[in-house]
Length: 307
View 1: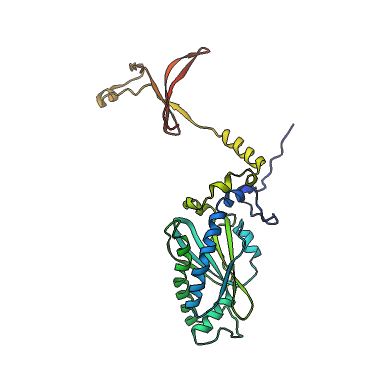
View 2: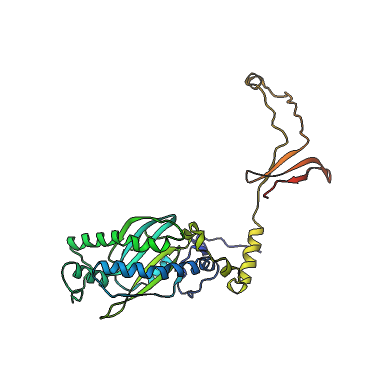
């Protein structure tokens, strides 16, 4: 049997954007789903905040409805994002990676038109904002922060601020292409005109900092876990190598003795009755030295509490 080795560059499967894959992602996607019940509650609480915030900017009577959330890679979301939008990237500690608000350019134009005395029904739609319009957009982005943070108040206090405003479809630097994100859309319907949609993106890995999001009942259900995936993951974890280390003695000598050491010198070592065993630098157990099958061995006498 022989093997052929080539210089073809290989990308780990975990880093390949899942283009063409169904929305219900296996594996890592299922890990992200543990946060779905909590995010759904956040989405429902967001309605009042969003309605009030848009009313402050002149859009009275707006109806806001959360839509079904999805979990996908950021690269996949970018490929599917066909609308022209402004992306507001917020720091939202302790959520690592922050939150991205995706606002359609049409909606921004309506807000700009109302701000400068119009009715919000101007025919002109452009993403080439003037300096004055960009100043308004900066102000809107800043004032939008309470609408993002208020729904999280019963779970965690978010320390938020503007990180970046991206226009003209520039998504670079928001998230890594392979990074999983939860996509939470909201339908916006005014009394007149077509419905629009804003979207919030949350990095799945960053949500670990908010343990209150996890619905323990939801993820304990056998119907929510793929048994094949679970067994494969469990088997892989159980095969992970753990470095076991023991120290038989720690003799000490003076600096004078150290400087005078030469080849052939003998250092006396006094073996303790019990020796410690550690795993990855953490004390695991204590044991005694003996012999097994003509080899030096350690018999475990006591395992430390908590292990």
